[in-house]
Image (tube, rainbow, N blue to C red; front, side, top):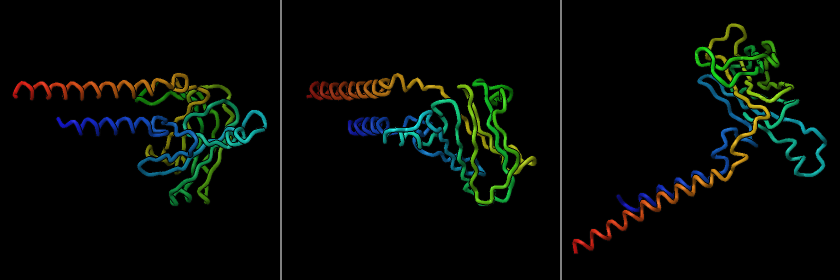
Amino acid sequence: MNLRIFVTLLALLVAGFSLPGQAAPNMKGRACMITTDFYIVHFSAFQPPAKKPETDAERKEAFRPYCHELPRTGTTYFGMDFIDRDVRQMPISMKVVEEKPTAGEEGKPQVVRVVKEVPPTLYPQGVADLRVNFDKPGHYALIIQFGGEDALEEDIMRVPLTVALSSPWKHIPFLKYAAVAAIVVFFTMVIFFISHFRGARKATQA
């Protein structure tokens, strides 16, 4: 196998690990684009700070949008922009539910309770907002139902949420770099042994 292929693959692999945000599925710091086969929703969540921000960094953090992972409990504001113009003429209901992390029947998460519910409403401007108070950490979901009570299964959009549940990668960020280092060492050893084997074979043939 050509050594250039190994070097190229190694470079691409390391570059993939080094891309900012590549390993962060929650897209923190940005709004989310939630999509299904039929609907597209531009979604973001904001959590006001517990105290008045005093520094520029604190003020910037106060207006930071979140996606699927919310860092703390308390008041949370959701903003939704319905991209499809057709849905602006149909009733849309929303609710936030607490779920068990384990799946129930039919492989669906089990709903523990309804935290907030909004009845079917028209949003002619294509923009909706929702204020929710999360009273405890846990797994939640925002359920958006297009078409009111007559909605079909494909008309329901589920946005999974976690509240005040820290990610293990935040506490052990060195694992990412350790994984990259291990991959680099592995490919380096492979390239070394292939080069050594080729050199030994050429010496024998000579």
